[in-house]
Image 1: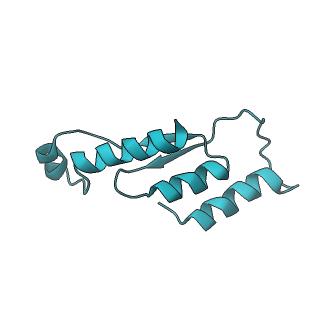
Image 2 (image 1 turned 180 degrees about the vertical axis):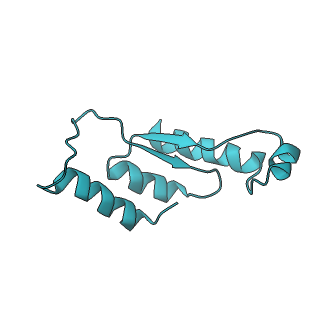
Length: 91
């Protein structure tokens, strides 16, 4: 995941630049994709504060053996932790 400051700069360029070709409505869905185990609750809060209102969580399986076989670095425990953090921040 890109650093929060980088994401903030990108969103500022979209929302605040007079030359931006993008014009988002106030109720626009703003999504970011994240993998379990790659973020903290504090990072989620920061993303929410800057307007991110939807997270796409990269979960291919809940089976640790399969996750290892397909080369994923996270495990079921990381997925569970990620879901708890998402629920805490986004409801």
